[in-house]
Image 1 (tube, rainbow, N blue to C red):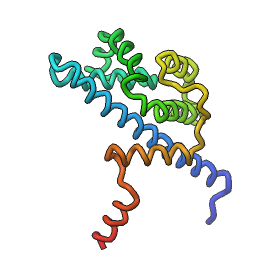
Image 2 (image 1 turned 60 degrees about the vertical axis):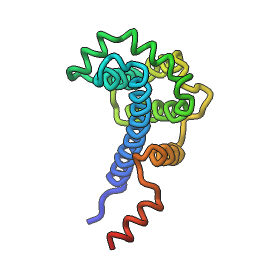
Image 3 (image 1 turned 135 degrees about the vertical axis):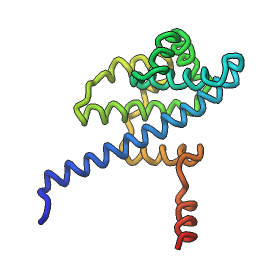
Image 4 (image 1 turned 90 degrees about the horizontal axis):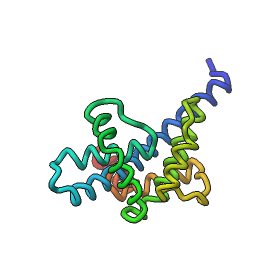
Length: 174
């Protein structure tokens, strides 16, 4: 039995949204890893947990996705000023991540809008702009362009395999 066209379109849209969200997650992970490493170097006297919690709080504030679980929630509340200070340092510390972060933020909110989730995008995008992270004159990326960007940075940071590595793995498994 063949599915109705409307059902196929909905499945395709869900698949696209899922793929785009996974792309956003790759950009988020790259930013988290870079931020955590930088914070570990600067906050050596605070212990091992502090840079990890601070990097998570920065990332969650940037994307408007606060973690309600402890210790993340309490840490973010207690260190709100520090989180804001660190967010304002992102453009100077990670200029190479501004394009991926801009695109990921926009795709994140595009997905939220398409899936009928609460839309806080204007406020969060304005905050990212105020920190100097959001590149306003950059066009919203098309899905294929965004995913190409995600694959490039995912491979560069070892989070994704390149096409060559995948084909080598497939040949060895045969």
